[in-house]
Length: 305
Image (tube, rainbow, N blue to C red; front, side, top):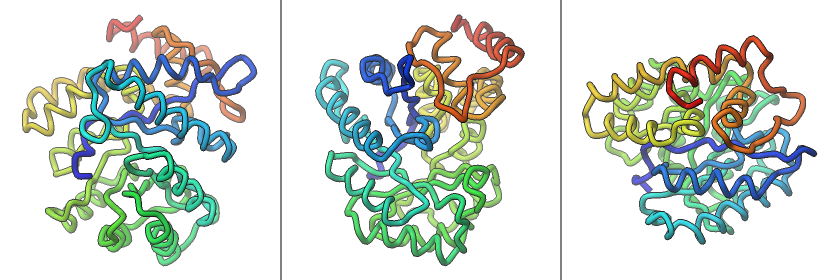
């Protein structure tokens, strides 16, 4: 599973007027990513509004994405498991629930599972190790840890990640701590082991890949998938001059992604560039008028609207 690298999209979940999942609109998004070369599709993550999805909806989305991509990928000359990977989010702050969702990912044929560290109940590092170890022991599927302390309230410390990297079913981490020193420590101690470090922040892709990371699970890829593929490929190939050019071209986009709580801004952007993706489920909302104007300026500068 070391092939999992490059630009993986943390894909939004389209909603209809009743805020139910719009599977027809979802088909259009998935085809868009297959056409544009996105290396991986990550449904049921934070950007996909996992926090307001029921477990039944999680399973429905996993089933739908796997079936649609399997059926349609040959039309785009894409090969599942070779140049295109499906990695659903299966995390929970209940270890039992996370195991059940990860088992479903395995059942439907996902290539890996993205598992966020437990949120709200704030376990100790020992508890975090127990949580991920139990999931890894229970389900024979590659697991990508997800560390985003701004959401969970608890950082997964580098020593914890390094210890978990030794588990045979734990293949990598999506690091969204924003702490480059921490990420460098993880890379230092997992080099040449097959453990994959992916950026969880679009704005940190450049330094993370330069330091030895393998790509990004990206919000921006919802809007500029082709550019994110080019960006990550350039960096992975050591073309840092091109990588820097693309980073600075996209930096304003990276900034406005979080002008309000994700995924409100990116869902607004997707609608502005022509996709039917609907509103966000409460308690989140789409950006207020002043922030929409700021987002529009960025989209205009990129010739997207």
